[in-house]
Length: 309
Ligand code: SF4
Image (cartoon, rainbow, N blue to C red; front, side, top):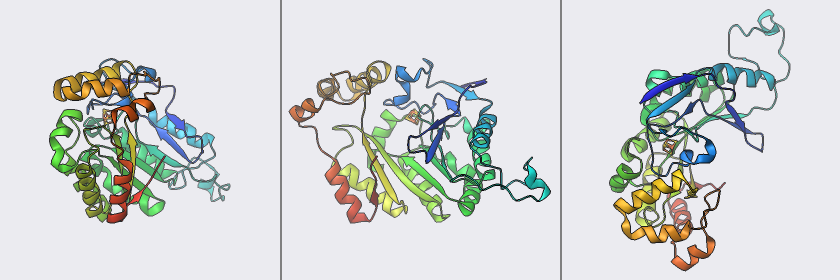
């Protein structure tokens, strides 16, 4: 992976509810998942998204600037650079926001994180400011920061989510669609270790690929493994295919590995909706499996909370 540093103008994206903010310290992702939404043109990512990583070198400064502007103080630092250092009580802090380091156009624990360490720098700041954190990844590398995660968890709260849509039995599908991410067994093992250390965990089960990973067997196996790993919740989501690079990549992959599905996907996503939403009439016409009731049943049976957007 080629690594390139640059000075960014923005880092933080606020969610409308004001309770969570998302950080994107990287652009590009070595995992190079076939269906990656980050490849869609509307995110203005570079063409060689899967082989060149752009690092926001000033991400730590941007995060601190953002938090200070919102009124937060580094309450867990010995030297805060404020009147607190002279023993003066700090003003009441604003309501805590959750800091989500979850990419969208990157996976923060892609292999380059070992060398660059930007996720760790972000987490350190989150700890200093006494805020809770939520991470999302497809890589076991998150365990390298277990010490810091535990500190945050003791201080406030830490949640680690793994993105998983294939069961361990379907590792061959992972190899096709998520060629450079951790194996499915490694992801479940990572979740188990995190749970054992008292960290809250969840699974983002998305995108559920029609006719590929929406079977009852695939879903039940994932939910069973999730329960075994102590996962608290599952958050599922369907596939969106934005016209352009993202859709072209998926269609090419189907042509190579699942030629029988090309026509079905072409029908479902033939509307070229700019947000990638499938055509509802085509879903009915094609008899696309409705996986949600099955997943709901498995989650109930195995005692896992089923979340929704
Ligand atoms: S891990 Fe996430 S950001 Fe990276 S390529 Fe896969 S879907 Fe995209």
